[in-house]
Image 1 (tube, one colour):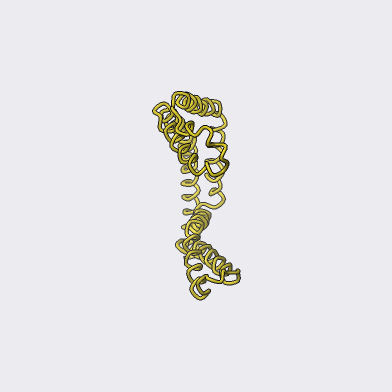
Image 2 (cartoon, helix red, strand yellow):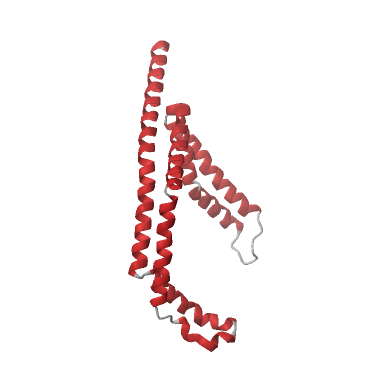
Amino acid sequence: MARAFLRPFAITVLLFAVVYAVVIAFGETKPDAPSKAILVPVAFGYGAFVGLWPGLIVGGLRLGWVLTGAWMMVPIVLVPLSVALALWAASGLLEGLALDIGRAAMQAGSEHEWLAEGVGRAAHAGPVILVILLPLLLVDLGAIALDPQVLWAMIVLLLVFAGIVALAMIPAGLVSALVLARAYVVRLRARMAARRAAG
């Protein structure tokens, strides 16, 4: 069973590493860049590091396929489908909560004394004034985002969104787990029967 995971995992990681190394080896470099003899092994190591997560996914999918067969597709299809349907069904609620954030931000902005407002006629100076104006504008926008009403509206939206996703994922995950467990037991019994018949 370990081979079912390790082989696709290693191939995926190696593929990423080789692609990164080849791109650096045959790509153009700047004249002041370090030697390719240094860059290619570094790119190979970085590519292997980047390939770890895709390798884990590919290896996990292959192991799941070996253990449960085509039933591995049930959670791959069912969980995203249930989350998408739940978000679609709750889109009106989520839209209303997002609009509440906008309303709270508008109210906080109307009550806020803007630092950027003091620039006045200096704005006619052109792009040079942006060096002074943009940090002031960022401070103003940060103050609005940290307003308690705006923060509360954001927290409510985040909690409702997380609740909707959880309410969609938990039943779909349980159904998928039951289906996969049954498929695993059936395949395990078939393997054991095949070994008994052969031995």
